[in-house]
Every structure is written in C-alpha cells, then in structure tokens.
Picture 1 (cartoon, helix red, strand yellow):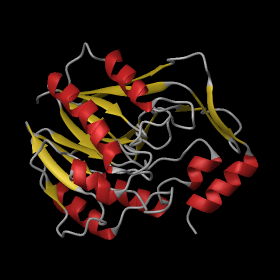
Picture 2: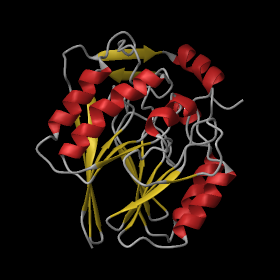
Picture 3: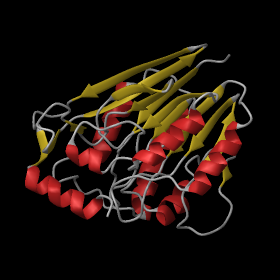
Picture 4: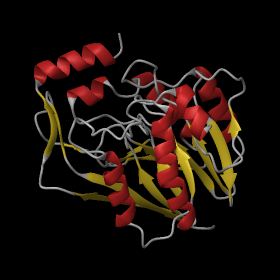
Length: 292
C-alpha cells in the first residue's frame, strides 16, 4: 500500500473583502502561518473540511482557492474542500465545483446550484468522498438521504488503498452546549457511522468545533481539525463559548494499517481572546441557528 500524508485544515472563514473575523483575526494571515508551519513537508492531500468562507461570497472562495491550490501543488498535493454551515452552495460551486477542483470528480446528478455538494474522486488508489452536512440558513448539520444513498453505493466497491471521508459536522459529540446544539443531527451521525462501519474508510475528516478531537466510533476513526481562524476553549464553562487567537491543523499519515494524527496549535499574537459568549448569548445563538 502507498502511504498517504494529509494536511487537514478547517474553518478558514475567509471573507470576500478581507475583513477581520470578529474584528480581530486576519484569517488570510492565519492560513498563511498554518501553511508555513508545515511547509517543509510533502503532502498528497490538503483538505479544508468546511466553513471555507465566512460570508459565502464568490470572492471569498476565489481568495482561498488562490491561496491554497498553488501551495498544495508545490507540495505535491491535490486539494479538497467541503461545505460548512457558513458556506453558500451556489458560490462554493462556482469556484470550487464539487470540492475537489483539481480532480476528475463524480458529482451528484442534477444542475440545481442549491443541492448538496457531494463528490467522489480517486487518485493513486485512494478515494476521497466529500459530503455536505450544511443546512442552509442554520448552524447545525444534517446529511440527506440522497447523499447517504450515493455514499453507500460508492463504498460497495473498495478502493485499492482505502477511502477518506470529509464532512464538516463531525459524527462525535461536542465539548460545549453551543457546539452540541449546532452539531450533526444525532440520527444522521449514527446512520453515517453505520454506512462507514466495515467499509474501506480509513478516516473521517471534520471541523466545526475549532479544536482537535480524535475519537473512534464503532471502530471508525473520526478526527476534528483545530480551527485555522481561532481555537475554541475545550474545558471552560460549557454553558459559555469562547475562543483564543490561535490557529492550527493536523498532519495525518496513513500507512499500512496505521493512521497517525498529529495536531498543531500555534499563537500568532499575544492578543488572546477572539470572542466570549456568556450563557445568555449562547441561548440566543442556539435559538437562531439550531434545529427548530
């Protein structure tokens, strides 16, 4: 089996006009620093597992495409992007297609730009499947039956080296009340793991929580990348929500039967807090962006 090295990034939250995230974070600079941190390494894949954009604008996707795809090519990698809850399907598709813009990908049939962004691509014996867990206008995640059907069909045939699944909302629990309220629908998470169990899937790459988590669910390894834009506080009061001005990612190596996940978190500035929502703020966000 050929080894596979992945740079797993998530939650880049680019804006079309380059405005600061929460008025604090230069997201393009955080991405530049994250890429520079591992620039001495070769990669096979560079994956950004959702919330690629903050404002869903075409310009935001063009900015991140121009920042990531040439860097990935210089390091021997192809690029993979997934939809997150801040992304907009129409704009995402116009610039990034089905999420694997430099691959001969198979897409969901149909031409409606508002349909979920699902794709399958194979390269050097490795298959990458991109799912769309976004729910337009909401913060929580869901995967529709059509995607599940196509996922099941794709996995009926095993890839030579195995399959990587990319989905923004992870099928594991969050650390805080807010992120749990905006997590992947629990029944959909169980259905996803049920399809992946006993398949050739080597790892599931997710984001959304802005902090590193790796959990085996019924034998399926699920890993959440630290946020590029900021890092959530994992062990603060779970009824509140706050993040620090830091960036991170993970380097994942798959070789033979082994999956090695090495996350990194770095601080670019002494300015620590990006945001802090108290319990009242959290309750309002849940009401606005969680399931009805």
